[in-house]
Length: 148
Length: 148
DNA sequence: TAGCTAACTGAAAAGGTTTTTCATTACGAG
DNA sequence: CTCGTAATGAAAAACCTTTTCAGTTAGCTA
Image 1 (cartoon, each protein chain N blue to C red):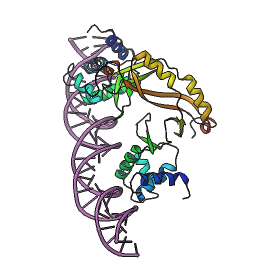
Image 2: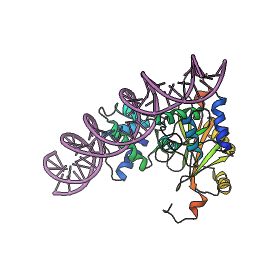
Image 3: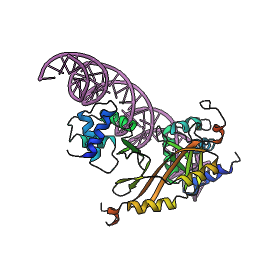
Image 4: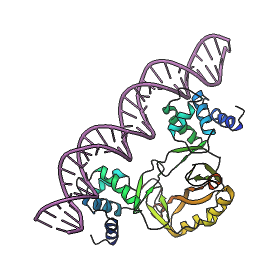
């Protein structure tokens, strides 16, 4: 497993005083192996390839921890709102393909001017924002619809 | 109840061939009486002031209908993601006060340039977006923190 | 106004997801 | 290697949302 991303994430647990257990390794592998947001149940299923008896409870607890450490981000989906993807550090936004659910993170954020306008118009002091963009990824654009 | 907004919304049910029942009136009253997003359970509680035996199931069914008619919008909140506010027609974004949860809808959307950049950068064909902004509303700015 | 029918309703039950509890296990410091 | 503590899986509890179903109501027709 000569994956630099894995090592970086693994180190993150240790750096904050948390143990690097087999179940947590399995969850990392599951998340690293996909670009789609995965539900807790999907993470458990895929993680069991690495840790046979990975429990769903552990997935929830680990996601909670990883969310607190900003290692993972929750993605609100149209149906439910409970998908998770590995996070890129810093402020990012997601673009989710509406056909295959592939996710790209857009690093950098040029919403400043727009938010200034909003502040002026509403009288609110703006402290944060959440943006999700949906579209059709390059691969899916080259395929006839409804065949993915 | 000489509320013009109530009449407009009430008419909306009829205009689409749906009945205007007491439970539905109660739900409208509950939503009209607040600027915060309300959970289904909160809508039931407040609606019972107008319709004593308003059931939670009816709240869910009515919200589903109102969502389809674009009378109401789901707001994803930091904790859960299941609040509802009355919708302004057209494309809008929400600004939610992080202290008192008051919501303002921002009409109009100047994200076009940003989305063009995202399209170029990612190769995705952009089809939609969801933006929520958090901040501190004018009222709360004038109060000392932690006293709302 | 009275009668009629489809739409709507509340209660109960089912279905799903997330959290809590608790005895056991395993990480990793020493 | 040993030990203490954090982490784990299973079971149960707690939620939230949807489905089912028999009874009720809105509002059209006469």
